[in-house]
Image (tube, rainbow, N blue to C red; front, side):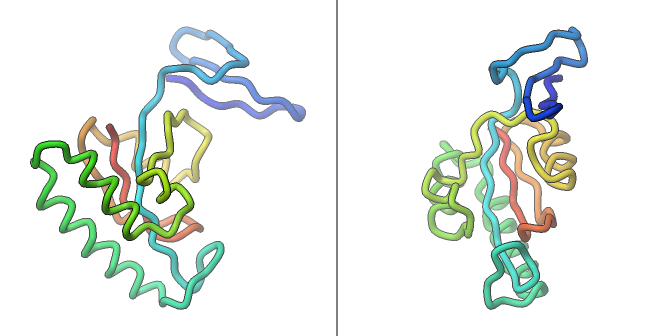
Length: 136
């Protein structure tokens, strides 16, 4: 498993299994997509209560879960992220790229790293708001 390490103003990647170090971002990791729903107490807040945001996130999650077995679910998820996510990654269909350990909020990371490929999880609460995470 690759981990992003920040040390003395420099960043490198470390594989805890092989003990390998690299200055370059490893090609290993998880490809993640997400939908972010913000609230009044989140970073870059919006005019929506935390409860309203949680309920909206649950509703979106249920709709996604209902459609998870459709052909090309990834494109379906990306279209929902473009439509509903309040993160700048929405412009890319919620695509966060390849994610290694220590790159995201701990709550986000914990949820994302237990996900099996092709599955979703949510709502996941972080300081940014509520997330629905999709692992490709």
